[in-house]
Image (cartoon, rainbow over all chains, first blue to last red; front, side):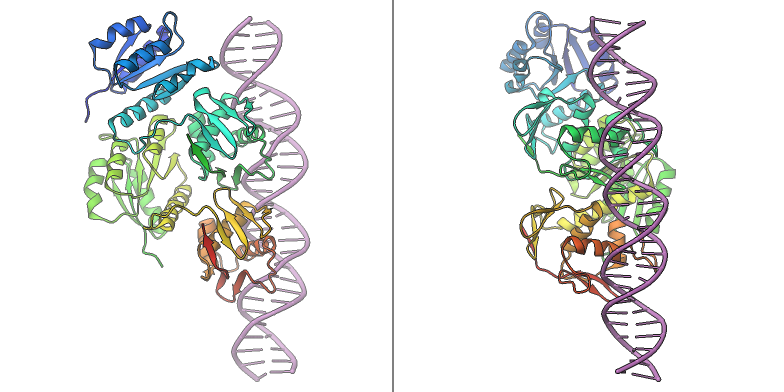
Length: 238
Length: 238
DNA sequence: CCCGGATTGCAACGGAGCGCAACAGCCCGG
DNA sequence: CCGGGCTGTTGCGCTCCGTTGCAATCCGGG
């Protein structure tokens, strides 16, 4: 077993700091929290952190500047928290070498999963050493995880609801695989699908409309009768 | 005939181990069960397993660590069992390269279907590590697995239903080989064909029409009286 | 060559699965 | 408390595909 990873959480929101401290510690990690960039700068030399969770939207010094400073000091992995709808240029913080990003409001479990994934990459253990894709292209469409948005083949933004985005993301992560309603229900809602549950069908239907995919004769999200759904497209990451 | 697949089931729940052993054995598979990762590690070198069914939520060593170890040892396909809402493990599990995923509580028939699908994929790709063909051509027709669609010799898309597509794919993967109704039924529906079962005949009939192949005098999908069906064409992969 | 059972082709039918419009409940910010 | 956006539920129509029935074809025996 490896030593417990030490995480530095930088967020001005006390609730989030507490939540993350409790949650991550329960998962066997050590957590130190800072309320802003100034405090984080002071804490930095005092500990050997394995990873920094950084909220970009903070009073005082912009999180982005702190991230840049951090990068100049060390190779420590950074996971960025962003609020939805923040300015473009802020999220370009990825260019700066952040290792992953999670949109607020976030699911702690998801953040944990991403933290683990980043740590594993950093340790060189994991099979997936590529950084998270900045854009994901399929059948002319472009998904930008950093901004949680979808661009149509003309490059225009198509606004997705949270649920639609998540569904699409799940599909795009496993193209050409049949995903059962059970799997989708579990992944997207964390609950079990009842036998007459049509929630997934309706969600797919709504997503198809945004993707201009005719449900009666779909080309992108195909139906597998009695099985589930498949994204029928080649997905390209970059 | 291929040898009976040997499955290693790793789950701490005795009921599930027993259920799966009985069920999968009735389906003609060999099953070995382990109650935890430690036991599984010991069993691993003693058998040649074709697939591992792994519960991630186990006391002792986390299933995830075992999966990682397994991956470092071999390319054996892994099907993961997870409890509902264990988002973390699921995401990481998929990143690790698990081949499929079934949510608990699961339907044994569904698990069986997934196991078969994974085994088929693993066998199809075989030891030759060639990437799956992007297009498959036969007698002027083109099958595009990535998009799950069929193009006629003029290059126009012919819309197939899910069942038609699956049938065609099976035929194309085994050209010039007689496929019995039993085999087709097993592969396509995961069940056995009754003695008066005409489902396959009708499915072939429907597919022939889409392929413009006259059933009374077929040139593409030939009938072998008392035997089954053959795709009579040279198949070209690229 | 003719007959009859076996086998297959396929049209027609119907149950089950699915698409999706419409409705309703929920959440959240004002 | 209201209003708007989001998502689950419901209902109806359509599609898919298994079943059934009958005609066509095959084939061995007389």
